[in-house]
Figure 1 (cartoon, rainbow, N blue to C red):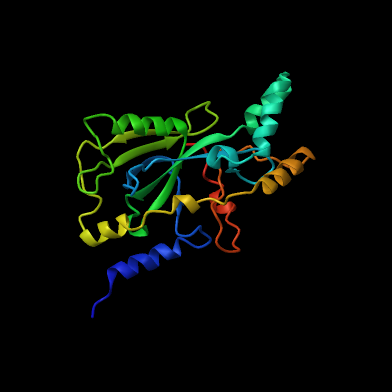
Figure 2: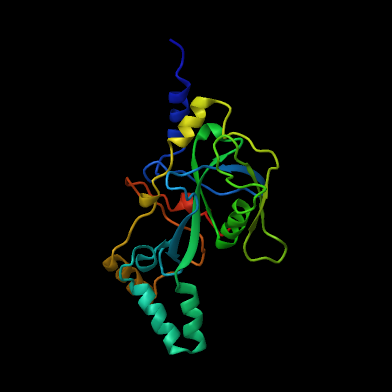
Length: 246
């Protein structure tokens, strides 16, 4: 019997998945041109929206309990108090701490196809560009497995800019996700579990984070950095420090 290529692909994917979050591997574009294919999701919405608090003393952002789940959030309460105070310093701090949007999609990265499905995190600006693209009748469903569209992402920091930006261009020619039917099935069966993508903190957890911050703990000013849900004891903060605004 010959080698089972599907199993070999999975073994390769597993090598890139240590310290992960139940199967998802995060990806950010490198400087210059990157080509990706956004995959369809079972619920018909491949653009997953989350709200994160940054700059509150954690090494990276964490999910806002209120914006994501409708639960109480001590940071949101504190932000409201700061806005109500109304002085310049309070408003400036409130703007840093208020929950911010971040979006995620399952993708296949061209040139890294054998590594399987990855999760691409991006900003509201990129999200708006993607919505405009899918609502353009010239393109339509860019995630269609057989007649979808690859995207060219040009990533980099313009002179004088504080953060890098991402410019999206759709390929004019529609293509399949893969010409290999087994590979296509593997991609479609590997949708990340977005409901468990990130660690969910309780009200008590968030209160402790805020208390440490107010007592003079360090804050992280790198918006766009998020920590995935940890299924083991491996510290993955460093691996995800590169998930900056794009």
